[in-house]
Image (cartoon, rainbow, N blue to C red; front, side, top):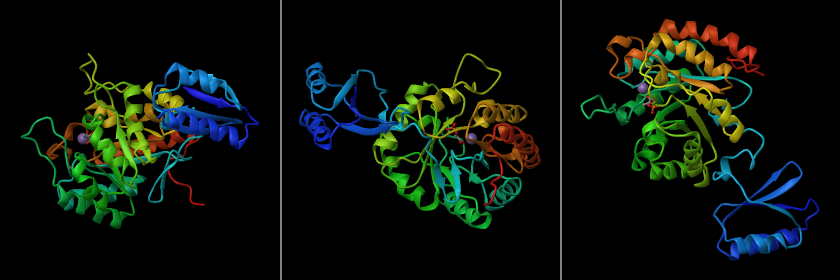
Length: 342
Ligand code: PEP
Ligand code: MN
């Protein structure tokens, strides 16, 4: 329920409405939308409270339907959120490309990939140190050693680092090394993990669950933001459908749908959607043309010997080629790829 106040509502009347709601145990969120002041009720409320409030001075109208994710909704904040990670702004004027290996495997591997993607215009470095793998026998990541390598390469290249955190008890550790915390698709509804990153100061890259709806993704983001961390970037990375020719089906419609419903930035991960290298540039181009604020892409210096996701990892040259194609599309969208230094 949203209480819309009269445009000339006095502070006294506004305070009385807030008090009335709080006395009934309701939690609320006040926002200014254009010339209107909205008081959104987060919890469902009794009809009797709605009636009482509608009769109070200063109340213009009661709108019964409010999105169940008030903090992240466009209704609450019409202007887009820009998420700053180091000196990179996601959701601003520029298209941001994050690139790096699926997993951090060794110092040499990370160094080769990081230097190459940085030279080709990537603005951030990715790499998994804690890997959520379908099989317990697959490579699980280097853990803290991988985090230290990421942090070292971040200093060497100047690229901020995003890496996945898979457990609430690891959030502080990962946050000490990383510039941005990634919540992977398999953990999108790990609510304790969402609350834990919501209590951290580092920005969050929240990937859509493999079988999650857009609304569930927005509710997951609401967990993080309502726990105190407003710096969330959403990521469409493909969903599981009946189609088997790709690893996942990139739901490109989710990009404009998310942009309409939330003020948070939206990125696309073409790598986990495609599952195979040759398709990645096509999906990447579609992502940018579909209005995404950026991409996160897997790149490996020797994909055939990668310890995870080799088949979908671009080669170093392949990434460079893709970036040239993306430059034209990003420019056409009015969102240049390479930062224009002012
Ligand atoms: C990854 O980024 O390597 C990853 C595991 O992604 P997702 O959670 O989208 O599968
Ligand atoms: Mn991967």
